[in-house]
Image (tube, rainbow, N blue to C red; front, side, top):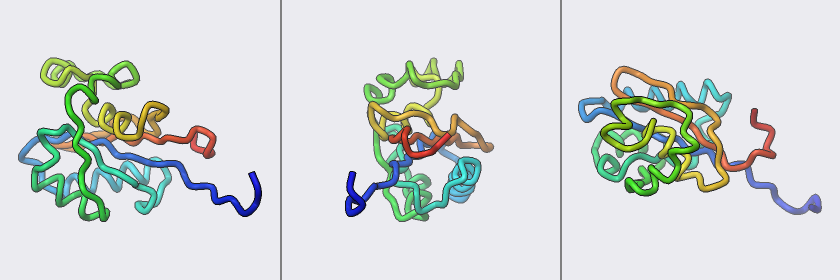
Length: 141
């Protein structure tokens, strides 16, 4: 690669799961906590993904807008296709959604088939968040 070739930073995707009564401020705080735990500035976040039946909820739309993004909707098939790479297992979510963690599955599905978890699921009172990254050669742990 020549010096004149731009190297784009790896794509960082947040996956979100949340209860309907969760406030947007709680989701924003959890996203900020996840980014801080991963040592990333908020500008590195390229997408916020969630289950398709939740993506149009005002709460997640407002939270995504705080980062200049719109939520990415993922259908059940896309989420379950990543379940083998999900590291956190919630029996309640497995029973209702068919995946161990909506947040991890959404992050991985949105980031693509080569993605890996940068930050496994973290939780707040009403939401979960995980981060996935696409480029393993980027210096990320």
